[in-house]
Length: 226
Image 1 (cartoon, rainbow, N blue to C red):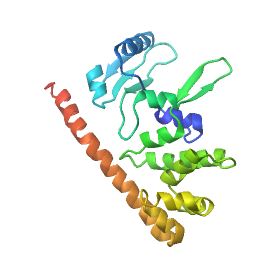
Image 2: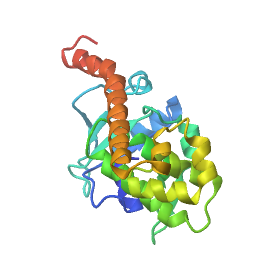
Image 3: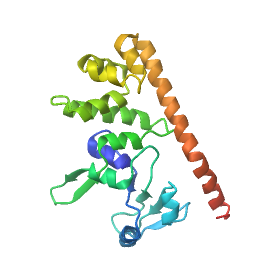
């Protein structure tokens, strides 16, 4: 998940850390600890590492010191706002392999788009690019689930207008769920761009609201109250 997955998909040039979403059961947590031990990774900052902490939606941060990984930061999560639980994510994963046979399991682009809907301004151009890449790669033989994804998540006025013209029935059926599609059909482009900006701001506000109680917990961790 995160920036490294975006690099694999071609939606980012570089990422300074590696983010993982993991299955939160006791056996898998033990496997994670063993892997972190092989990397000589130590926890940095807060919160503390624990399944209960992960289950509440926190990310736990580690720094590696094993040869070849010195300074690499690893962030681990088990839950994300607006994103399905791990079994569903795993069932939809994309697996890539390199020439040496190493496999890399990535969040699917639709799941990665949901994970990137944060309050951080830098994530939204990445979302735009991920949707564009997905459309470019699948537009020749579109499936129903792909059309649904594009209409729900396209972030540029031009692509939305193109999608509504190409898939008018699907766009009409989705207008109640995403009202700005009505503007994409018959409204001016400036109004559509304004609606997209408002949609982004609303999503960022939801993310701030989601993180507020977690932020308060982090402050308690910092002050030693938990």
